[in-house]
Image (cartoon, rainbow, N blue to C red; front, side, top):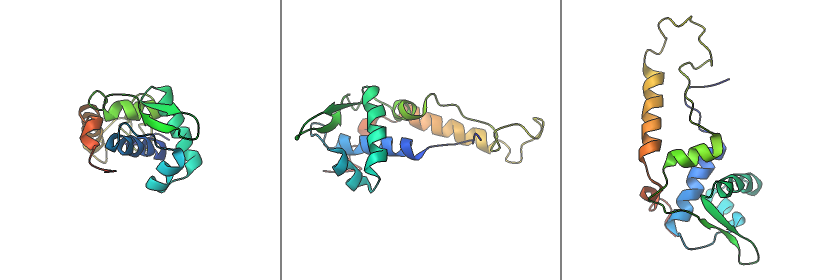
Length: 138
């Protein structure tokens, strides 16, 4: 079922992981350390990290001193790019039930769902990763 605003746990992990990496851009962070910092499952985080690396947002360094570090300039990346690297294209729905059960007549929520979707899209599009550097200070 589609919902108006859906930010999955994976997308949330991607945002938070990128913020942690932004706080110390040159440092390599092992998955285990990141999982501990974020209080999340290491295996779930590893899957998110693979997606971020595949999109070039982070770099993976193997070996005993390996880990992940930023692969981009923090001022060049928007939160929308991070979101879409995990979720695919941002596709808001105008109905909480995933379909137009009311026949497209007046929505119970009026313009609220459309307005929330527009605000979220604007925020994600206009917010650069560099603006989050002070959330997780090393």
